[in-house]
Amino acid sequence: MIDWTPDPMEFTEGGPAGASIWLSSRAIAGMVEAAVKAGRCETGGILIGCYGADRWNADIVEATPRPRGSLSGWFWFQRSKHGLASLLEDRWRLGFHYLGEWHFHPGGAPTPSGPDIRAMRRIASDEVYRCPSPILVILGGQPKTRWSISATLFRDGHDISLEGKPVG
Ligand SMILES: [Zn+2]
Figure 1 (tube, rainbow, N blue to C red):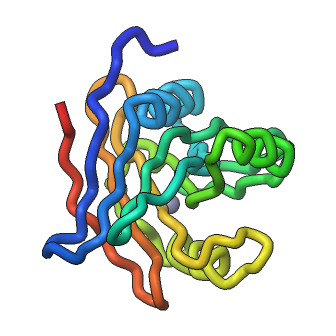
Figure 2 (figure 1 turned 90 degrees about the horizontal axis):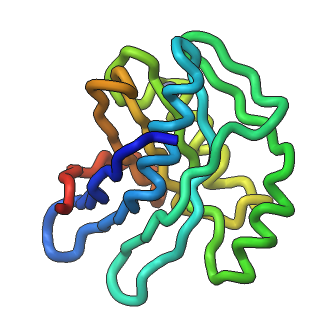
């Protein structure tokens, strides 16, 4: 476990009608903890939460650790689906569902790569996920000391990178 509590973050598209995504302290801690464990390898999992009532907004309450059977190297990560169906069923009872994906770029910038973007577009059009506007959160840098987080929303065939700031 990490011994501190990160501030939650808010990511916004800009403009009054823009999308906004809330990333909880717990979700950030989950990603940082998984990245510390992964060392020089990519790691990742899924984002779980809910959508808000008015304009387009989402609350990410949880970022799950890497499912068993996932494959990773330095700068690539292939998430397995192991255990996710039952996990999502469990969260669904609490009112939460699948919102997207997260992964770690060890030592690098949290910028989505070409394969990252293609993978998210596939998820957006895959009916199994029931998530036409998935979110990609990337943690970059050194998880123990200096890290940064990006959030990209894939909506209507566009990838929208959102502006993030910590909410103290
Ligand atoms: Zn990536």
